[in-house]
Length: 203
Ligand code: MD3
Ligand code: FE
Image (cartoon, rainbow, N blue to C red):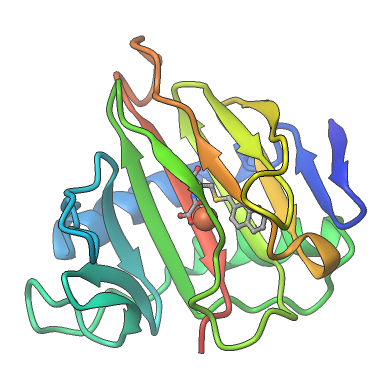
């Protein structure tokens, strides 16, 4: 149920499952208000992962750079509120991993169709690196790459299944990470896709 990936990083196997009765309808409402979209990187590439956000701040990218915004650039309206069921899941997972009092102000929603991937990167667009990051995996399984502080450090491969939650903080907060291209498949609840929530304290 619990696998250590580093001194302050661990996988909580199946931790999200008891929360999904509240989380799945809330996800649908968020995506109705702020649909998934493929962002463009500063280098001009369209990301294979489709993204949306909820919470006070949302992560976005365009030719000008990566940043957090209060408003959805597509609609001009604030990102949808963080559903209570999302916040409860994130706070409970962080506490289980030893990070008490985590209150996220941003939830990035990533949708992987078969073939979609996320290349090795660091999360460094947040204001302070003291808060942990909580990541929830739903739907098709994926292989997560967990590297080191230097991009060239060899990355470990970690399988992530429906309901798994990963919590990273402290000395592991700036490690490189990514997701291998999603394999084709059909998940009983979510169909041919993987959904990831990445909860952060961004502001
Ligand atoms: C490891 N998303 O959106 S979050 C991202 O499955 C992102 O979609 C991944 O990486 C996904 O930026 C997984 C996992 C994650 C987040 C922060 C980390 C892993 C991390 C910080 C340090 C080390
Ligand atoms: Fe990341």
